[in-house]
Amino acid sequence: MKPWIPLLLLLAALGARAADDYKVGDRLPTPAKAETAKAKFKETSWDDLLPKGWDPMASFKGIDLNKLNDSDPRADEALRNLRKAWDAAPANEAMNGAPIRIAGFLVPLEWGDKAMKEFLLVPYFGACIHVPPPPANQIIHVIADQPAKDVKAMEAVWVEGTLELGLADTAMGRSSYRMKARSVAKYKK
Image (cartoon, rainbow, N blue to C red; front, side, top):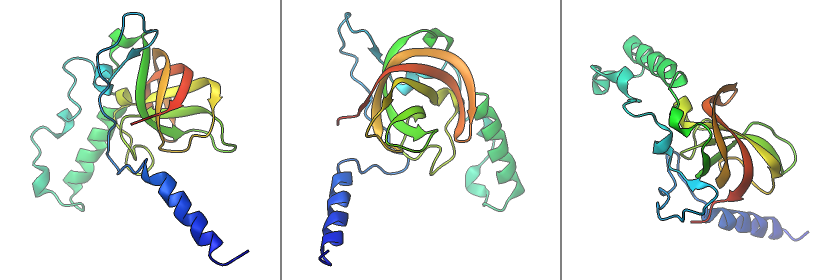
């Protein structure tokens, strides 16, 4: 093999990823609400999964985070309280049984060949892998009817299926929702 071929392969791989170049915390654009009444799955935003009046930052009320450093025991306590509250985050009961189409980032729950049948869907890049999990009501535990092929960890995807309320504890995070996905497709910008 010529010495420059591995370099070309590396550059090609980097170029292929440039189109999907997300940074930790990036979210996908909110779906347009201009859908037809005949659509089988309603395009849904992550905010639709939040129950009215639920405040994800309630655990930090009265705490000036700017005055705490990482080694402060109060910072550790605040983060423990936040994690506890987020793991118990309530689901939006109105979404139970809703046929939805939602865009998010794929967090594998199984590894192996290129087809994935079970994964978490999260609203922002890096969640559960590079940063702590979001609130449980911002995580969907997905089991696909047909394994999703040619997708990888943290890839942006569209998922269609019927949303159900149901807690799931996984090594990557706790979810308030589950979905038996009818389809999983790569997200197109």
